[in-house]
Image (cartoon, rainbow, N blue to C red):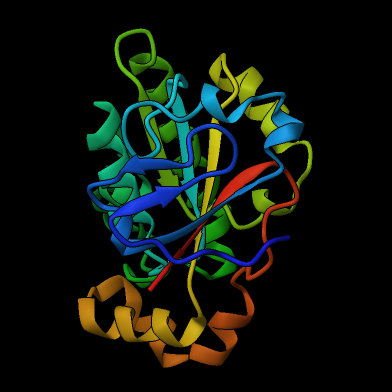
Length: 218
């Protein structure tokens, strides 16, 4: 895999579209991975600005505090999409459910949380995506840690949602993620900081095993 390139005011792509004006490209380093495996030409996916594509469905995923939400919001704004962020869509319901169960409302990593909430949270995002896709493009944002290691996940997701998404894996080094987590001061991050080494060991640092765009932040 090529190393990420650094970008300033323009995004550099392979093929015919060598430069495109990119209003927010300076915040990211980006590489395109295995585009040939998608059966696409660069010109099929490089509209008139950064990451504008013909695709109506995008999945933005990666470790917490890697920059997923910032990237997903800017991508959604760029293409006029409905943004479905796992934290924003389900956070209030998850906290209420954990409190009613007598569990820590900030817990997002225990076996109890994963057994009760992980799949329902993602299925809620998918249901909302299916409802919105006939009308507007959709950007889904969430960690999807386990799914990144499943080569069959894109095909499963295509069947679930009715079309193949474009995948954007957002990543930055763990030490930078820790700085961001401390800086944002979210209650749900307290358990991560309390057991940082154990938590980091659960994060996926390797690129996904299927075609994707890698976005390195920081």
